Image (cartoon, rainbow, N blue to C red; front, top):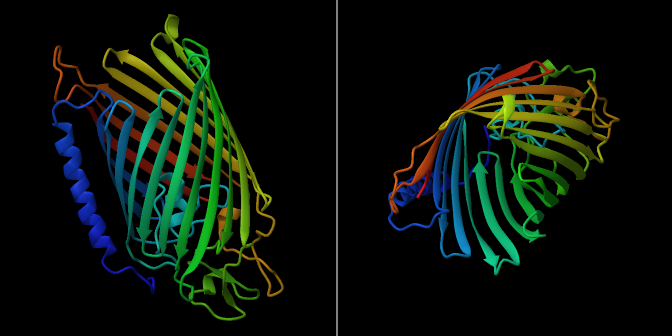
Amino acid sequence: MVATNIPGRKNRFRIAGLALGCIVVAAVFARGAAAEDYAVTQSYVHSFSNHVAVYTEVFALNKDVSLETSSYFKYTVDFINPEFLGEGSEGGEGGEGKGGVRQNVAAVSTASSAATGGGTTTDTRNELTAGFSHNFNNLITTEFYYDYSQEKDYLSNTPSITLKKDLFEKNTTLTLSYSKNMDLVYGRFMDGRKSRDTDNYYFGITQLLSPVTFAQIGYSGSRARGFIPEGNRLVAISPTTPDQCTAKAAGSCEGEVFPSTRSRNAVLLGINHYFSDGFMDRSSVKLTYRYYTDDWNITSHTEEAEYNKYVTDRNILGLNLRYYRQTAAFFAKDLYTAADRYRSSSQQLLALSSELAGLKYTHLFKATPGRSNGIRLGTFEARYEFYTETIHVTAHSVMIGLRFNF
C-alpha cells in the first residue's frame, strides 16, 4: 500500500515491546520498591461501522529512582485490520489524519492506518515513550519525555518538557509544557517523503477550592508547518466524480493540497467535586468544556461530563458523556475545480458533530495488612464506549486494564 517502508524497525519494536513487558512483570514482583511505583497493562478493541477493527496493547511502568526522581516507560502497539476501507472521520477539528480509515480510527483509538481508497491492508503502529520527572527541593518539578512512533506511512519523534510549581501550601499548581512533533510523511499518493514540524504549548492552573472541590483552567496552542496532508487521499476535479478516483491523474484526480501552516488555539475549563454525604455520598462529578479555533476557520465546542460512584468499598461504577461540534474549514467543499488553490476529500473538514457515551467498572484489590514488599495495591478496570458522528460513522470501544502498585 505504501511504497516506502523502514526495514527492520517493526521487528525491533516488537522485541522492545516484549522486553518492556517482561520488565513490567518483573518489576511488579520486585521487593523493596517505593510507594509510588506502579505497572499498568491495558487492552483495547475498537470496532467501526465500516468493518474496521483496531486492537491496542499498552504496557507502562513508573519506577522511583530516588525520593526526588522517578522514571517512566510505555510501549503501545496498534493493530489495524480493515475489511473494507471507506471514508470516515478524523476525530474533529480537521485532524491531520493519515487517510481513509484513520479518519474514524483516530476519533476513538488514536491509531491510524496507511490503507485507503477501498483497499484491504493492515497496518501496525508502534509507539515507545520514555522519560523521567525530578522534584527540585519542592520548589519545582520537571518532567521530560521522548516519544517515538512509526507505522507504514508515518514516522514521528516528539520530545516534551513540563514544569510544575505548587503555590500557597500546594492549593494551587501551575503547569507549563512544550513539545515538538518532528514528523515524516510518505503516503500512498506521494513522491518520496516530506516533513512536518509542530510546536505545541500548554499553560494550566489547578486550584483547590475546598477539601472536596478543585477547578482547572488551561490554554493550549500549536503551530504546524511543512507538508500538512497525509498523501493518502485523492480529490476529484470537476467534472470527475469522487467514485471515479482510484488513481492519481493530472486534471481529474489530484492529491490533497492544504495550506503550508496551521495554527491552533484551545481553552479548557473544568471542575471536579467529591460528594461525601446524602444521596450522592461517595461519588464524584467532573465537568469540562473546551473551546477550539484555528486559522483554517474551524471552531469547535466540546462538553464532557463524568460521574463515578462507590457502590461498595472496593467497587466503583462510572459514566461519561461527551458532545462535540465544529464548523467547516474555509476551503472545504463538496466539489473542486482546477482553479481551486486548496482542496481536500476529507469530510472531517466540513461542519459536523459527534457524541460519545461510556460505562466504566473499577475494582480495588484488597491490600494485605502489614505487607511491606511485593504487590501492595492494585485495580482492575473495564470500560465500554459508543461513538457516533453525523457523517454516518459509529464505533464500539472496549478496554480491560490492570494496575499494580508495588
